[in-house]
Image 1 (cartoon, rainbow, N blue to C red):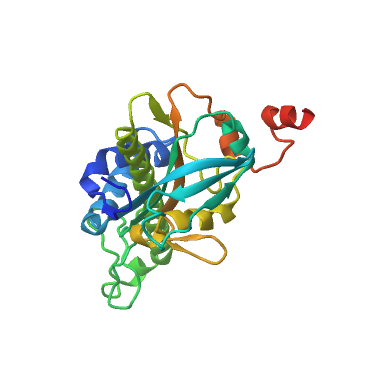
Image 2: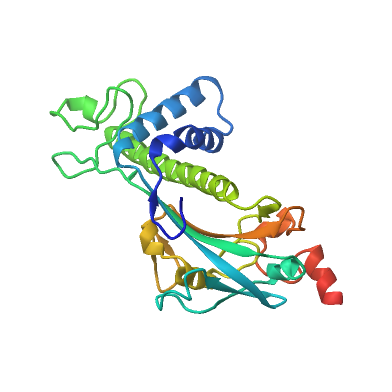
Length: 283
């Protein structure tokens, strides 16, 4: 389904999963009426843009070869057929030492992005429209004396109300982007796992920023899979656009092969940071 072919994942296929992420992350600590209001507002924000939500992915399969304890060489499966791909790309990270004795038989390198959730509505005065409740559009309307300073029921001034609404729009936008991205990553891994031979499995998600892997490794990933095909731009500093973008690597391993501990996921590469590195440094 994916290999090297840009794919658009229909929003409706991720909606249920994304809503679970949204409710779990944004509704944390909310109960009763507050939770209902939050979720209702979030759905209204999402539904106003649902036709524009664009979820894109691209995946490349690579052959692998261990070069050193902490690095692996990846060769795009099409390297022998096209001059577009380099023969080998080196990926380096301390965590790769934990795969040194594992029969890694390949790797999927991928990029994902989610866009279209940005608020684009604007009033006649050029300001972004807001959605305070089901019946509010954020229009300035005519001058209404004291009502312009206070809504008469909550004690919130007009400008304060507009600021709060804008803040909620920003919050909803960010949370939905993260929720659809998380749902897309889960969907991607499920699809890839379904296509590998019996007796094999996928590693935890590796990649720049995870398991002590430097963000500079994003450039190596960009040589193996085309980020532009997934709507992703990589800056000279290694950051990605749009904001809701992700890059990752799944190694193909024999079922039951040892994998790095979950605690290694947030490792920043400090050799003093965990038992594995401490044990390694004693040898």
